[in-house]
Figure 1 (cartoon, rainbow, N blue to C red):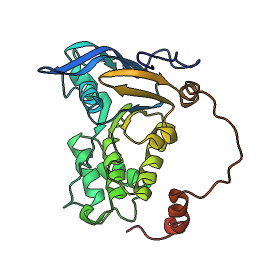
Figure 2 (cartoon, helix red, strand yellow):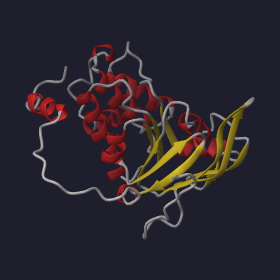
Figure 3 (spheres, rainbow, N blue to C red):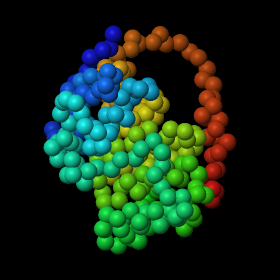
Length: 269
C-alpha cells in the first residue's frame, strides 16, 4: 500500500544535500538488489535507512562509498559524483561497517595515532587524545583493545572514522550484536557526530534505533524506497489509535537501565 510513497522534504532543509541519490540500480546476475532508489540527505542530519536482511542497505552504502559501481542512476556525496569522482568522494567520507575494524593488539590510543599517521596528519598524538576525550575513552586509551567491551570497541571504531574530519559518515548497522548498554553508548556517539555538523547515514534493522536518532527515515524494501519522511510524518500514515487508559508497566529496557543506573560512575570494564 505504501509502495512508491515519498513524503515531501520538510521546510528549511538545505538546498544542497549532503547525499543525493536518483534512480540507483544494481543487480547481481539475475538478482535485482536495487531497483531505482531515490532519496537525499540534508547536511548535518541523521538519515536512517531501515530494511530487513537482503533489502539492499549494504549494497547501497557500498555504492555511495565507491566500493561498488551502480548499474544505473546517479549518486552524489558532498556534491561529488561517486562514479566520476571516486577519489574525491573517498576524501569526503568515512565508512564504519558492521564489525569494528580495530587492531586488538594495539591500545585504543595507538589505533588512533596509527590512522592519523596513515592520513599524514600533523600532531597525531593530539588528535588521538582529543578523540579519546570526545568518546569517553581516555581512561581506557592505554589499554589493549582486546580488553575492550563491545560498546567501547564500537566507539573507538567510530572515533577512528572521524580522523581527518570527513563531512559525511556512513554507519552500516553500527549496533548489530551489541548488548543494550553498548547500543546506548553508540547512540550517544552518533548524536554527538550530528551535533558537531557531521552528516550521518545510518543503516539499521532496529526500529527504536531509527526512532531515537534519525531526523529523517526511509524504508528500503525489495530494492526500492517505499516511504521517506520524518518520524512525525511517517506516523501520520497510520490511522490514529483509539485512546484508552492503560497503566504503563516498566519495560525490560527500563528495568535494565534502572539496575545499571550507577554504572556510568564506575570504571569502564
